[in-house]
Length: 68
Image: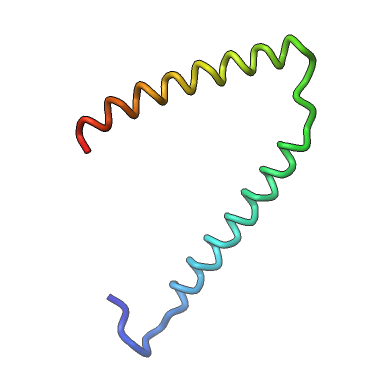
């Protein structure tokens, strides 16, 4: 536990690193989303992968819901 008036350097350092990481993730997200999706065949493959991933997550959440 952190004592009041104690050294908070590590807490501020962790907070700064967390905020810096979120800023970096935002930068990467914008950079990736600005890129072209590709030709029609690439878009079809991407849509099929997305559909399969969503089906998997739906089934996974149904299974996990049994334990929650």
